[in-house]
Length: 78
Image (cartoon, rainbow, N blue to C red; front, side):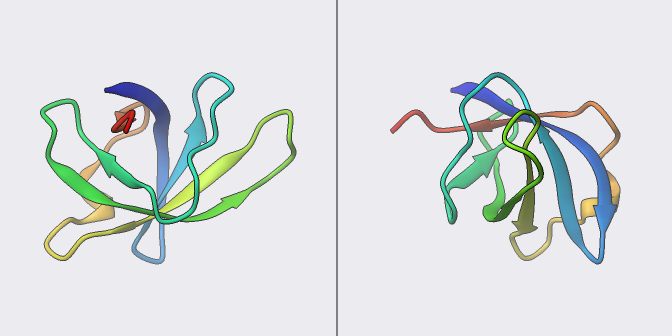
């Protein structure tokens, strides 16, 4: 799996993340931790094209507040 984002902060239950590299994941793309546990799906892409961000809607049971700044998030290359 490829790193696509780093967690920045939680906002209204969503995970707000900064894109790592140049690949912006598509809306509704599943997002995972390094251990391949699915945490949610991309709900929104925002910001300037030079430094985009994504908002991830967590799956049930996943708390955005449980992440810390800099945590790496992954997308399945498929």
